Every structure is written in structure tokens, then in C-alpha cells.
Image 1 (spheres, helix red, strand yellow):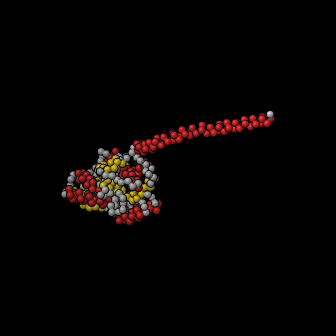
Image 2 (cartoon, one colour):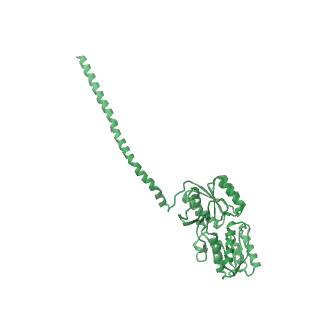
Image 3 (tube, helix red, strand yellow):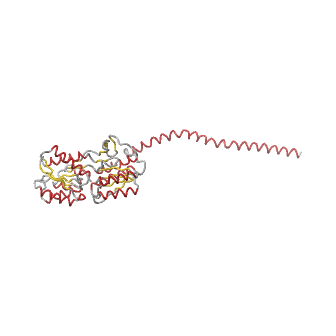
Amino acid sequence: MKGKTLILLSLLMVVGMLFAGCATAAAPAAEEAPAAEEEAAAEEAPAADASTEEAAPAEEAASADGIVKAAQDWRIAFIPQLIGIPYFDAMKAGGEQAAADYGVTYMDVGSPEASAAEQVRLMENLIQQQVDAISISVLDSVSLNPVMQRAEEAGIVVYTSDSDSPDSVRRVYVAQAMDQDLGYTLIDTLVENIGGSGQIGIVSGESTATNLNTWIDYMKERVESTYPDVEIVDTRYTTGGSSEDALRQAEELMTRFPDIKGLVAVASTTVPGVAQAVENAGKVGVVDVIGYGSPNTVRPYIQSGVMKSSILWDPTALGYLNVWAGIQLLEGKDFQEVNNVPGIGEVKYFADSGTLLLGPPLVITAENVDSFNF
């Protein structure tokens, strides 16, 4: 009886173990159900994620008024002709705004004096720093073309803005206005101011400044082709575009040519000197002064009657366009015949000359001088 009892107990234990095994095996099946649901959900998820990824760029562009961030934090440097004057301060402000909008680093690297030798030195330093792009307002193409070549050979994108060197390796010229338009508009405005005839003189900046000399050439061309009763009696140059030197040159022109009716201050730094010379000579209303001066520079002289007009453009917009152009070059994007630049509008590109044009010249007068702050 005892043996039968032991056999019965053994059979019960075996049966119990079999039931326990079944229960243990069934548990994972219950745990696998959520996993299967997650797997099924995961198979549907990619379609939703893909639509989100496709929508993201459109949302970014819409939220930033068409501005799409640069591919990376490019380092873009600009070398102005000099620093510390309203014109290049405005270009710097525009460049800094563009850098903030597009997520790049902007470096404004200049000298307080207009010197081609200083521009060469500054560019050499930027090559050593291995920046991504360098834009320069060229003072002397003969001096700068070789170092621009070295920068390109070092893998740096090189282009020009404000003043060009068309025979250099530069990729594009970011122009404030067409040189011919700047020269012609100034002469047309001055001739109207002096009554259609008379002697005029020119006081420029450095004799090697590419942009200034080009504008002067177009002024002379316009006078020769259109205004037979106007005579350009002399063209004077100043050291570093000095206002003091401009004052002296203007005084000498008025002494040598007592019947002179107009003076052109080509560089913005020469405007105050030329205007002051006319005031000192007591010839306000007799000798008209015109030049390429910013509104803040010319405002007191327009208010005093020394100047009726100044010819310029918006340097803040030029600085912004300068950085935008650098980003396009760095990212291998082609310029279109007409480019829609956020914050600026339509900007034309002339492939034959490699020129990106901000727009037509701005004529500053008493009617609009207070509308600007640069």
C-alpha cells in the first residue's frame, strides 16, 4: 500500500510539472503581443516621418521670410578700403545682419587708412587663418591680384565687392550699381545743378583706386559725348582719400579757376573737405558740390546749401548682398539672371562680366536725405 502511495504521488508530481511548464510557455506569448503591435506600428511610422521631413524645409523657409540657413558655419571675411567711416560702417552692419540670418561667421577686417599695402597684409593674414571666403573692395588691382591668386590656390573663395578687379581670379563682383550709371548719373545731375554749362573740377581719393578711376572715366565720357558747354578743368587726387587733403585740393582748384561752377568729390571721404573749402571761400550757391557721399555725411552740407545732390546706393543692402553672394559661391550654387534675395528683392546677374548688381544709383537730395540713416 505504501508502494502504491509513492507511485501515485510521483504521478501527481509529474502531472503538476507538466502544467507548470505549459503555464511558463504561455507567458511569453502574452508578452509578445505588445511587441507585435509595436512592430506593426513601426511599419506604418516611416510614412508619417517621411512626410514630416519633407515639410520641415518649407516650414523653415516660411518662418524666416524665405531665408534658408547656410549648409555650415562658413567664415566669410570682407576687406573694405578703410574702416571708421559711415559708408563702410553701413556695409559692415549689412554683412553682420546677413551672417545672423544665414548662420555664418562674418569678419570685417580693415585698416583706418586707405592703403593697398595694408589690404595685401590683411589678406595674407586671412589666408593664414584659412577662412572660407574673402571679399575685397579693391584699392589697387596691380598690388592685390597676386595675393588674390594665392588665396584661391589655398582653397579660399575670392570675390570682390564695392570696387572690382575684373582681370583677377575673383569669382564674382558684387556691384553697388553699374559703373557707367554712376558716372553718367553724377554728371547729368551736376550739369542740371549748374545750369547746363561751365567749368567743373574733380577731387578724388587715391590715384590707384580702381572704382574711383572707372567712375571718373565715365564722367569724362559723358561730358565729351553729351555736354559740349561743360569743361572738366582738372582732376586732383588725395593721399588715402584724406578730407584735409581734399580741402586743400578744392581750394587750389577754385584759386586757379576762379570761374569754376562745380566740384566733384569722388571718394566719400573727400566730400567733407571739398564742401568745407567752398564754405570757407564764401562760394555757397556759386560753386556746386556733388559726390558719392552717404546721407549722414552730406546732410549738413545739403542743409547749408553747399550741396544739392549726392549720388550713392544703400551700403547696408550691399553688405548684406556681399555675404549672401559668398554663401552661394561656397555652396556651389549658380547665380541666375534674376535672383530673389530675401530682404533685398530681385538682383540681376550679368554672366558676361561676372557682376551681381544691387540696383540703380540713388540720388540723395533735400527731399529724401532724412529718409536714410547711414
